[in-house]
Image (cartoon, rainbow, N blue to C red; front, side, top):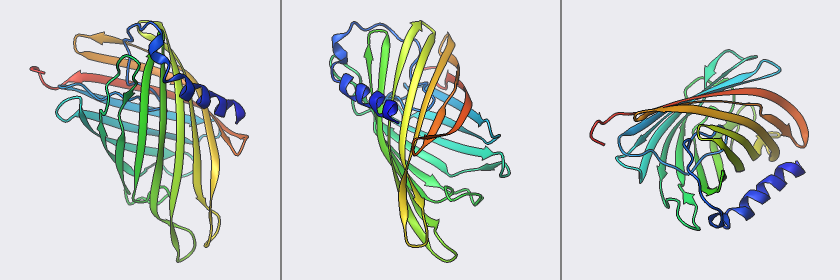
Length: 266
């Protein structure tokens, strides 16, 4: 846990000074696995993203996201469909409808900033308490430092009416901090280290809820190709999750993205 918090501190402290390093072009952007990057889609381009992970107990989860400019880089709409399985039957989770504003584009001495607001819609398959209506907010910031990109996130998820007893329900609020460092080893090969800390609000009994620390550290790699206006990205990672300081799960994660034009006159 201390290593996790130290990584987040280094990312936050290093971000304002990022403009002092010589900047080099990254061919791959907006393709992180766990930490959101602060880049909206360009006019005329949309992105399809698929991620899937499985831990050593056989539990698995995945999601599909599609991002669209509306109509240009300033505004972006997207949706995310999560799904999971393992001990429980395969099922969908709460669907996210997302709006993201490109508040600042990256500049000299200034990170890109792109706040996101999401509405969570239950699917009607109540296999777990996360399938409840709610909202999610996130504030990502991104800055290049030479051959590295630094990404920092701060946000929270609020769920309404989670069951806390036979006849009672409660609302849950879970804050989140995240950060990552991405190393541009080659034009289309990046090494990644992502870190996410969630204070997971959980039901203790009918009268009480409590925050549980859930930390994930995930080393990974991504690579891809650009063909005219289309780009294909493949990636893999090994996220390790700790709950209240104890290792709870190690997993394998795979990632696929296909970005392509929908307008020939963009």
